[in-house]
Length: 191
Image (tube, rainbow, N blue to C red; front, side, top):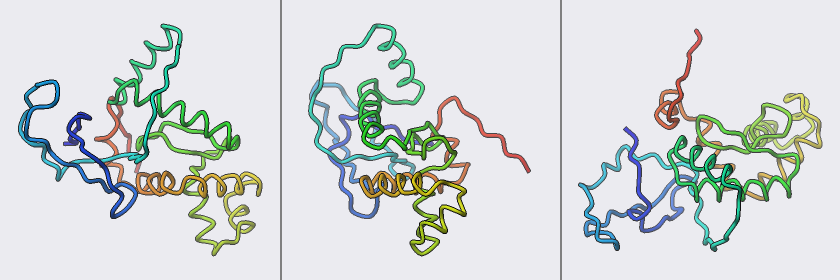
């Protein structure tokens, strides 16, 4: 079972051991609104995904009612809040503008950066270059990817190394672990 945290239960995050390591503290008293909390969560089954430790600033946006409703439905489907999902979409839109050869796709492990136009996650492109001992030309031939697209993936990975490390970790999870992360989704295993 995957424990879901309400954001008032999270005191803070630290990056101590790796891209998905967090420090989560249970607050045994009532929250600031006076609501009583249930028993402490079993953190042995806690799955953290896409942890971003950054200070945020409020931003007010006006969107058509239809877009707001669609965002609410998507957030509910992905098990998050509309504000969090909206923040992710705005962040990814800015990154896509700055790195036009990168796009974001919904995967069983969450949204990930991909090389635009091909089925190649950025983390895998970067890992292939590393496997080729830094020889981007060789990696480009192995991936059958134009060298400029591979360079774009490397540039994106250099700009956002923590995100790529988290994507690499998520991309290597066994299929059985991913099944619990994706609501309303099933996997078909072909032998």
